[in-house]
Image 1 (cartoon, one colour):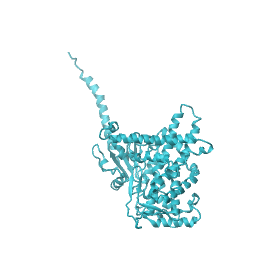
Image 2 (cartoon, one colour):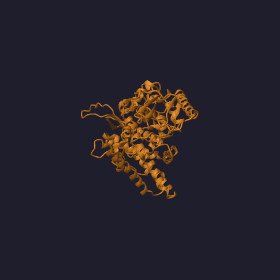
Image 3 (cartoon, one colour):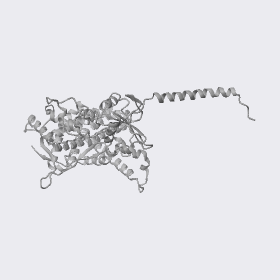
Image 4 (cartoon, helix red, strand yellow):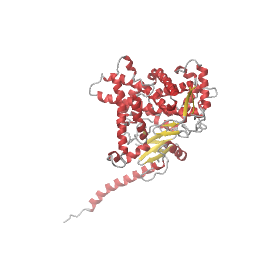
Length: 508
């Protein structure tokens, strides 16, 4: 027989539960009413989000179109990943600089580890390992240390020009050799050959196929279908697994081979000028237990320098070459300034930089005209935030669209006729440089800004001024001397660079 239940006991039991439920419902309703809304953006499709609307090859163009429709802060969904696109330098600085404590993480990239790029600390999450890598990197590349590389950078720029004159068809290859030879000298004390260097081939083989997979728009395929990495080789769709394994093998070789070279050539005091040798000597004073971890961190910092120099500087020089071909009057004016300051008895040096404001404005306009990393490397927010009344959720990817037509490189108010290459926009009526320097945004913002910025800037300036002083960049001509018509084609990944029909010719 089931015992009877006292109705008063039921009431006493139900009342507290009801109170909890009512309180929870009231709080939920209040939160829904008081919680700020997400930034505006395109309506996402169920499950897919906005992925079908994004130009995966040039996503900055899509984000710029959405900027016109939704404003400076745009919320999008890439499958299940929430993202906020920042289309204003003012907002980018407010978030990435002034709130860098919570905007310095990196989003998860499903292709990063499978393709062997977890060795690049630029993609690491914001934590202790990243801080240690950054510290090692900063010791070598901070402005006070970077000045000692200037003579070597100028020497490499002159080697590059000789290559351009002797073999003008392969100018992008010469730009890559120039940039990597500087990084290898600084990091490993490795003196690369001016052409066909074996270690530069190792880096090129590792990075050429893999870097394109490191954008959120492309990595989303592997995030959605991770089983692709486990398919048998005979199965359709297994090519991504084979590509990932090949990329990993090559990036491992790129990390280990030059590092072993540095270890084997640590001789004399000169080696203390290089990142790896200097820190290997410090490792000798560490306890045996911590050495393996510190050596791994050093390898990652050194390899990051290689990866960072592989595309960025060559891509900037490709944009410069395209500009000189497309705007010959600019090239002539820059050459005239160099001749008037330096004369014809010597080549430019870094000591001349302050006396060449028009060349400096050409450099700035090159940065602005075709920023080589239009979206930079995305950030991630580590806790909820509210900006200008909009809610930005924890874990969201934060993308700074440098290509934006408002407040950044394509802003018509700031840069009238932004699609044209006009260096004069960075000079005042007296011919002096203005305070507007695109380097302030093209090298990234906040704690995750490019730590090699000053060395990269010096490399690019040395290459540009040396080319202007020694060669003319002009369109290629056929056997009859007629200019070959060409349309620049842009190859995109993390960076974009142009393939154009340009031939340098000796001019001085």
